[in-house]
Length: 388
Image (spheres, one colour):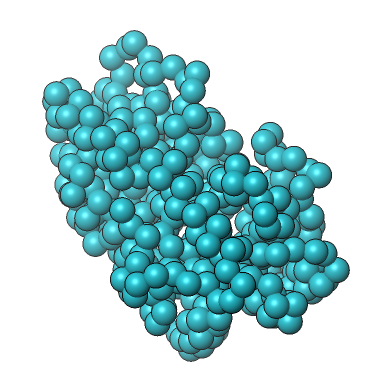
């Protein structure tokens, strides 16, 4: 079996850890090479003997990260040059570039795991459009040299524009069934709970949701996750004096997110569709709702829209329409049978389409083919996107 080195600049990361566990089950050995931004010590599940760390406490959205990126790449190049491995598994472009260089020089296999299309993530203050176009061209060119390209959803195929679709494998970021073992269901009171757990960003409509909920009697909102200082101050100002809004900023363990999800009656994921990456988003919040059998409100104009519509597991509202969101919340609060039906459909979608065991088998099979083949990866027919 193969020695796999997995690289990630944002860590801890539940997706990468799940993929690593799947590979270990298949007999592969796995080591992490990560950028420690000060959160690794908070990860209870991490085995530090399996992690090589580049330490620099710089937030990914801080412009100073540009100064540290060359050092991060040198760290990767040095580690890959002097360490034995059979496959390097690089997550996103900020790890893929140096990993590709060394992998090709050492004639090793490389897997490119694309979480989001990198050109749409960067926010340079000068020449932003030109920078995005240049990085987009570079990314699309370099991904053609990967042996495998992992995408979280088939919709991303169009976004990344990869020519050789035979090398694409779809691995949805769905949680493991075991992650909710021992977590009790919702409390036996009459509170109607709404929950958001994950990265707290301005493009996710959270400030407006706070304004709406603070004026909805009998509705309780919890928001948990890391947030910039500026936006956290804005949310706190909006929610000040409200007894039905709970805000908690900072890194949150995935188990705690799922515990809050189990307590909730309703989840929501509202992503501004004017941002290109958001149009293709199928975030783990959607799959967490499915695992826990909870309805979800999403906005139109994204990949989430089609998933929710096809599986009938939630309600769809226009982005930026406070009246539509308020009406959807009130409808679900006042109609328990609708909540139960949507929640049942959500759980069925998880079982039949997005169960992690499905993704785990797909990843293990892909790595089996990759490490068995002496030549380039043979991915099958041109329409083989890995979707069941």
